Length: 405
Image (cartoon, rainbow, N blue to C red):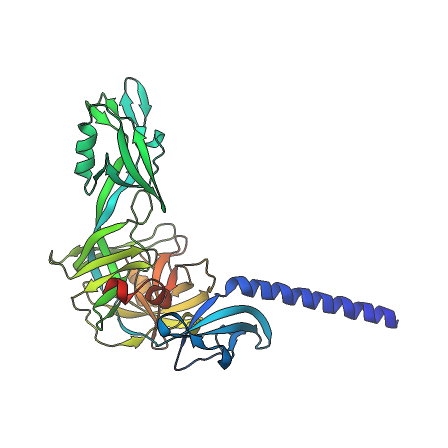
């Protein structure tokens, strides 16, 4: 009898230990390896709810450019170590939330390959560019050693080649290679073609996330500007922003996201685009935001599930606050721009837009008086839901005053 009891207790303890190991392993994958913390107010007790951060004062040292850093541990229930974490002490940043529309004019660094159509030549149908290893989304940097900035420059080189092969310098993701393309004479167009459509510029309307008058810099969108056909982020050569207003809204419905439509109010530049990356667009700004109230930027561990406010513009150029709920939070380092799942709960916004619509990306999310994040994506099957990126991710990971000021 005693042996049976001991056997059962041993089995239960083994199951509990295995479950604890599984939970710790899951927590390891769902928590970051680095954390920014307020150098004046480190709160370790409620960092991740059941998870907290513990560090020793003896571990504090001078980190990069003289900033304080420390080694810590993420703890489960305040007692069980889950993983090591690097802590960087940072003075909390304060910015002005945006929520206003702005016009974007962007010119790419090289030519973005958007399509690879076939060339009709003596009964054959093929794309010489595709045959040479060029793919949609690649960047064409030069032809026969001549740097390319416009579509017309490439067209002139192709149509004037006389059938001779062309040497194209191509960037594919982070790699650069030379592709030799053999043009074909297109019998329909009566000209030499290489079967490649490219784009050198883009324009549209976006939403500003925040502005920092201290250095005249802004951030917007919460995700990069991508080529409409290839889906790749447009490499920025130069660009600017102009005034814009929202003129109409196409409501989102299940299966079809809506759109904010608008127009440029003028052609005069109000700022310069200096970066286009996966976390948004960044640059200098000399316009007005309609708001002069600074608010602190929340560290990601301070963002909680629950009620929040969305600041956005759906008519004209004046932003308004709407009620939302933060439904889920991911601290996984794999979810770069999908850190939060949010739900639109404000009946006013739902009646006008049906939820999240295209053009709303970058709209700031305010929680507990702090800038918590920005809208990035809509759930196509239920547009009242969407994804959002942490404001910390936009501000600290990719936004650098040294690089953009």
